[in-house]
Image (cartoon, rainbow, N blue to C red; front, top):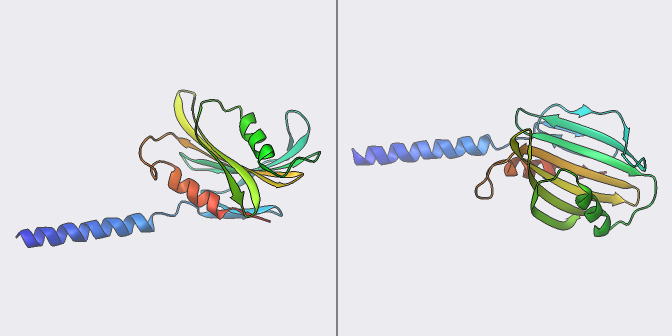
Length: 175
């Protein structure tokens, strides 16, 4: 009787593991422009071009959203040359007016381009949210902001929106 219970427990554990592995893909909608390709979590909306608040750049924004997770790629074309290094990516990270607390910040290179990454936890309309952004300096006149906003979930790494963020950021291909 104990052997049967152990075998059943192992079988259910294996089925649960296979289900988690098979359900692990969050990104379902490939999208491509002349500047990037990425796979979003839902159908993509392309916003009309807009000018920045200081009228020094043009923004092309592409976004998708599920019931709980919003994702976007914004391609910014700057009207003047900017440094192609961490001073520019840090400038954009520091200029983020979301508020809240930065709980993670780093710099690195993605496909040869410098970026600054931030994760901010903040409250909007009484809801705790987490915002992850990569500020990628593509050239002296082009910047890509890769962003995901989701409900805040505390706990160990790998919980909450982190697995979906990893899939989204890994899907980005800069052209």
